Length: 319
Image: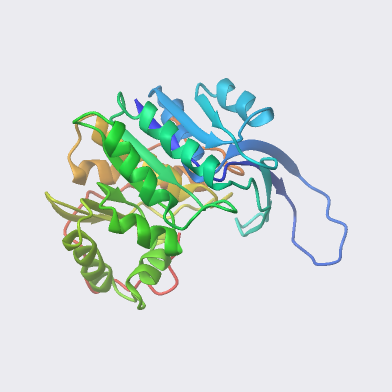
């Protein structure tokens, strides 16, 4: 079982347009609605691979809960004020995506406590607890850090905790010492406080995080692939270029889900990295926030994991 926590869930509405022109009337060529939020997306990938998963979130009732159940995911809703946000993505034929994200639910202090306590209750049977996404209005920056602590308190001896967020929330979560964090290059640079133009700089940043108590750092790097720094070693790999990019939304979530799927099946960090990159590459070829399943993922399109090429230029990579 993998338990995901999405403090700010959403309904993701994707509209494909021939071109995005300000002030014009745009006629959509395709449209879809998916359950969204970073933790929810991780659960959706896991469910497509037949892996049991439970999604904890504030609010998340009505249409969102129905969509999750239809996808084979058990939703667990906690109290929240307001309604689930609708995030709208306008996608052009070359994959360029323009997003408009609504604010979402708001949590009072008591509602934050209920969310954190609910994670502790459901953590016991979990191999992983994944807390991911933005912090909703009213919640403190240390929300993900509190969830890390709660998952450890309620989890079993084999329960591990992963975090995928950004900004002050990521900094606070890192201080709680999670088993895994998954930033992209831009998020990692913000965390360590300086640019990371080369892979050597990313490696130094992952060393800094691991020395501070983080078990594993999984860095998604867009077209440059991904890197994993784990207790067993450090590896890098990349997929063949995706020629038909349809949407980059959720690619990082699919990368994290692919890594966890492989690790829970007993794969080494190096082999799990290959599966993670294959899942992320598959995601960008799918419409909107559709997530990959077994038929979409081709691990043969990914170069085997190897020692990181430290001189690799990462300027502009942030996926």
